[in-house]
Amino acid sequence: MQALRIYAGPKALAHIRANGLKPEHIDVIPGAAGGPKGLILGPLDRFLFGEWLPQSTQPIDLVGASIGAWRMSTACLNTPVESLLRLEHDYIHQHYDVPAGQKRPTAQQVSEEFGRSLQAFYGGRITEVLQHPRYRLHVVTSRGKHILQHEHPLLTPLGYAGAFLSNMVQRPWMGAWLERVVFSSANALPFNPNDFATQQFALTEHNFMQAVQASCAIPFVLQAVHDITDAPKGAYWDGGITDYHLHLNYKGLVLYPHFQQAVVPGWLDKSLKWRHKATAFLDNTIVLAPNPEWVKTLPNGKLPDRTDFFTYGSDLSARVKVWNTAVAQSQQLVDEFGAWLSHADPLQVHPL
Image 1 (spheres, one colour):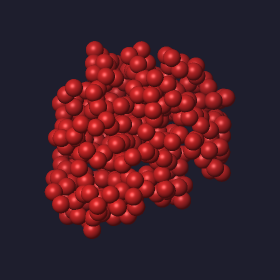
Image 2 (cartoon, rainbow, N blue to C red; image 1 turned 135 degrees about the horizontal axis):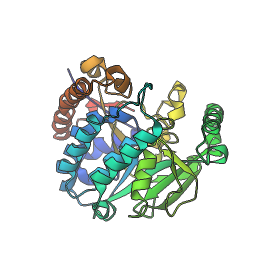
Image 3 (cartoon, helix red, strand yellow; image 1 turned 30 degrees about the horizontal axis):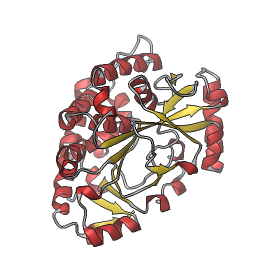
């Protein structure tokens, strides 16, 4: 069964028809939020950053939210293949001891352990990320406003309820509760930010760890990161809240390794199916995603996801086995993409 589906917006498809697809054509690579779902993109990431893109020399903007920020930051290290393999291993083997009498670890516990993991992973290597000769990194976070400006056991749930209701009416209205804050190693953003309340600040050695942890700080699962250095004070949460799948108005040709066809704008849009369709923002985007029928052949008939933490509970070895199996099977995505690149047949590309 075919594992890979290639989708393209109209401008991207026209590019493929005229020029095929070569590494020197790529301007932007996004990395979506989505937790463990992103694990199946590990083999593709290693192929792209370890073999394919090194055949070109142009600057490329890497945009990431949540696990996508972790993936894109890791791609900027001097040893991307080895580092991406380590990320995969560390993510799959993460485990949190549940305090007695509780069903899940506390947000404080998860935040503290994740912070230690980031320090162990990037400690002494931040300069590699920020000074990569080609890759310009953009880490997306969500900064709370008004009652979401500070984390609070009562006000935070109320604030997110307000954000959800505002977002249901119009996505830009959510900007009254949360704003997109992007930390960048380069000055220019690779997308037009006028669709949503946005601020941009420099990504530096002083705030890199804070920014990446904030981008991964799922509300109520991790604690918000407060008062990031060289940025406005306040609570910063997972970048996926404002930009779940980075459905942005990109500049240039975008190659998007993703775990599904739909590029959902924000986390609060997950249940709003009418917002899952591609817009003109994605006209110049190529999405590499698994065939939904192939996904059914993975363990449990689905992608790895956060429910697996509860399904397997303290049985770490069982979850590790299932996730490792899914990742191993996803090598088929790489094999099929490599075969397609040899002829870049536009007839095998589906409309996005």
